[in-house]
Structures are given as C-alpha cells and as structure tokens.
Image (cartoon, rainbow, N blue to C red; front, side, top):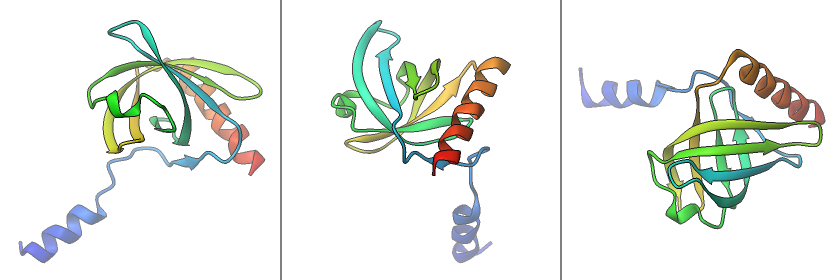
Length: 122
C-alpha cells in the first residue's frame, strides 16, 4: 500500500458511530469532575450525538484532560439529563469532546429525544 492510499484510507475513516447535531438553540451543560466530586463549571454543547458531546465555553476547559471522568447535567427548556462521560479529545484550549459512558436504554432514548427537540427548533 502506498503512502497516498494509506492517507486516503485514514481520511475516509470516521470513528463516530452516530451523526452529530450542531447545537444552535439554548442548551446548558453543568459539569462535575467525578473523581474529585466537585463542580468544574457551566459550559455549552457545540454539538451532540447519541455517543457524546463537544463542550465549549467552559472556563475550566484548559484544566480538563483526556481520560477525565465527568458527570454532566444537560439542560434544555423541556428536560434535564444526568449523564456520565469521559473526555476523549481535547481539540483546542476551550473545546473538548466527551464520550457518554454507561448509558441505559432510558438515557439513550432521552438523549435522542433532546436531539430531536433541538433539530426541530432549527
């Protein structure tokens, strides 16, 4: 396999299992460091999927590291979801990706319903 073919294969590979939905309406995300059991602030979801969320505008973002276990309270106008996740990517100083962990079927359905409400508001 040539380097060119390898690069094309890597670029075509999408590790995401679920489509992302960009958040354009009011959605709040309260975040807690689960190992320290303390709040680390209020952020905004930049995009969300059934698999996770990209967090932005969290003042403590530079202190969050890949591998951190987080507790999250995701709040929209109709519902509040308490979810657990792990930081899997830290793209910039003020943006990081969280993969949801240990979602029950009820949690998965609730996240899907929240995404549906967000998408309907666009």
